[in-house]
Length: 161
Image (cartoon, rainbow, N blue to C red):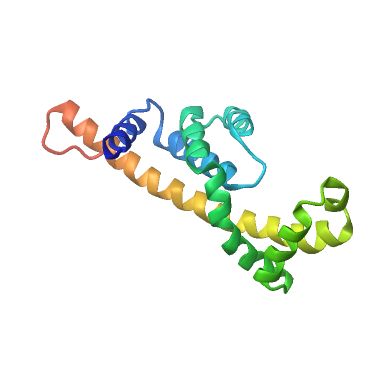
């Protein structure tokens, strides 16, 4: 398992694109992977439109898909609850109690504005912070990796780019 992760990481850093496009694609994929209801197709379309790296975006969305949503739900409820003056626990409980009722009840004022809106806003905030962190980490490592590769290819001891 660890060997597979190392191999994937090595291939990820060998993507032939600019560090910004790779990091932005991965961050977009992570963002859309964690946001409820988004998926691979949306990620590919947006990555193409924004001219981000589609391979990195796909890796990001697949790495975070369903499990990321569940992990982000409590902080999203806390952020949305804070902004809307609601208890995060109450938001989650009310959402879970109405979720099984179907679309007919989802579009009612009580569910849409009082429960779903705080959760969606909370998700945007939390997932936006996570995606920004992924972007910053990846851009740092990709630029560092590209500089190291450039030094190795040039045969010099140190070259500043």
